[in-house]
Length: 137
Image (cartoon, rainbow, N blue to C red):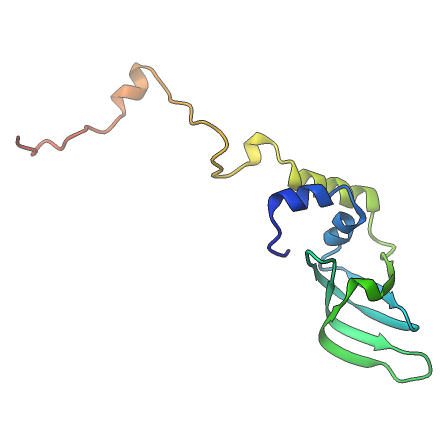
């Protein structure tokens, strides 16, 4: 995924862009104005909705197909994006929502939660000493 901030990602979950972002790594077909058809692996969709593809085959009417290793398509030139049949649209959206709204137990590291201090004699017995034994004043 691209370096989008969390707020932007969370807002885009509810849009078509959020769904298309979930298709990263999938082989998709993109039709561009002018009758050009692109088939390739969707790598990323950036903040400006531009689409990056890899292993692309470009087909134009009445001409031989051309292959590219990497291609960036401007969003305003896109006419259609065809989603592969083997992708379950509802499940893909659910997975994206789970990524954007994780359960508190799935958050690693985060600074959002306060640390809960354990108290009790068992816990205090297992604490290391504040000063080593060979410490002299």
